[in-house]
Length: 248
Image (tube, rainbow, N blue to C red; front, side, top):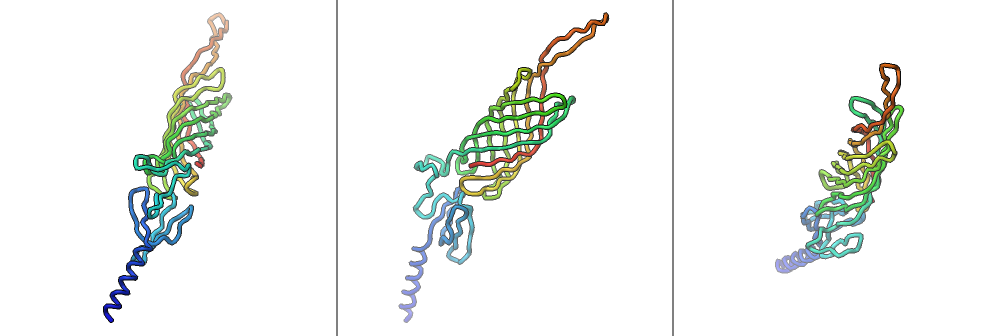
């Protein structure tokens, strides 16, 4: 009788082990258990004790011996970061602008970036692209075309994640009277991942743009004669506002 019970227990244990899967996460953690749900959004696993664990699908590298291939269908090797893929980022920015100690106004702009969604095994965006930013001052508007390199780094991995980002480049002036200069930006915000493919970004962004502005001034001589002359003066534009972006 006891031998039959022991034999039955061994058979059940063997069956349980054979049904268990090995799940590897991007942070290197390995989880063993039964996969209850596996879709584009989430993977739910039940361990041997019956406890259930939920992981974002984007953070799962492989289940058992079947590796989850990158969406560009490139082979993944031990020397190549898993999950690396090209992504596109489109964003809109708006808020206030100032020329320190001179004028204030508003600004609005947009950008198109292309780069890599993953660096190593983290969801870090690194890329480059173009933007268009308009500075709206009283009596004068300025338009710049920033060519920039940017990086966005999430503080944690997951569907909901705060992040920080920065960009640097050169902003070209798009008018005859405006010459461009160095462009930089910094932002902090929130990222919501819709799926492995796309995410929504909402952040508070500060931007800095150097420029040289062609200005005409008139000087009145003692005899009453007015003389006009043109010069190029350096200006620094500082903008602060909200940025809304999407990656796919």
